[in-house]
Length: 449
Image 1 (cartoon, rainbow, N blue to C red):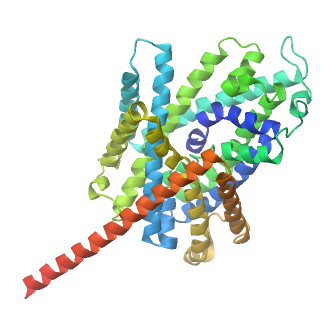
Image 2 (image 1 turned 30 degrees about the horizontal axis):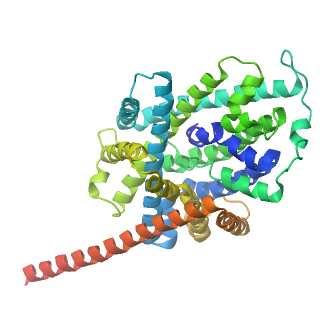
């Protein structure tokens, strides 16, 4: 449920209409390709997480496979990305809620939400899990309800409706009205919509039975997410023309209003707020555990290792909460150009995570098999190593596609800049560490003499 809650967010509820506008009904192909890519990456990550559960997840695996620099870089790039996302999520919540309650200031809504989820994360991981379960359940119920209404609308079961057939799916320019270029552009719009599912492997270190929990979760989550994403978008392009302007404004609302449901817009606003709060809650957890793991490996301030009596890394949680508030302030105070650079850096960083997951799995698989002994690995990536290489080639194809699009190219450039900055920080920290070690060693030798 945590994986579902993290991956089913505002990107589905609000962003799916943009993909439809770009590719038409053929955006279903874009979602299927992106979903398959995520299935393969998650299978690789699950193989490593089931064998070696760690709160640092892919950062730990990158360090073991490629060296300390890779773990440091991947961990802090991911941490920065989620900190920026925290600001975007809570800003979105504040703007919607103040639309309902005009007398309440946005900063008040943001502060209240941050305070609540700070407490949730500080109390203990069980409480965090409970919140995420119920948030995820609400979103799942909303999507299942939407699918039921959409199917009833498509087949003409609702009062005053008739079966829609394939007129919208194949009419208005055909299934792929913008051609292969549109499908490729749609892929760029939707490929990062599945981000968040990786929290399953971050949380594995705190599960009762990590190997079994990760294996079960990753087997079931991926196909459910594919069903929800592809199913929801299929309903949209079946019941409405792909070029209908209301799909861009709010695809879920457009379908529910077509079905004659009163209050559909307000209902979906509530669901979007819950989706944003769920993602915010999950991202506080993910950032705090990643920082805790990095500090434990000597790649972050030691203070981040401090834990409460309930084994919660409370300093890391508070740092994430405070920086989340800073990110909210940046959303309100910074000029658009500077904020755009920061958000662009976060935008395609998931691609860095996926590439290093695949490379790490290629390198670690023989070691994991040797360590597992006769019992074997709890979970295996299919078709190793050929399917892993194919996934890397597909990710390379996504990069090439991004280079052909102005907005995506800016994202890639900003992410490359972020990675370069983190690598430089790592190099400087290593130089300082070596100098400190030499100085300490020299002082000890003089003392002994």
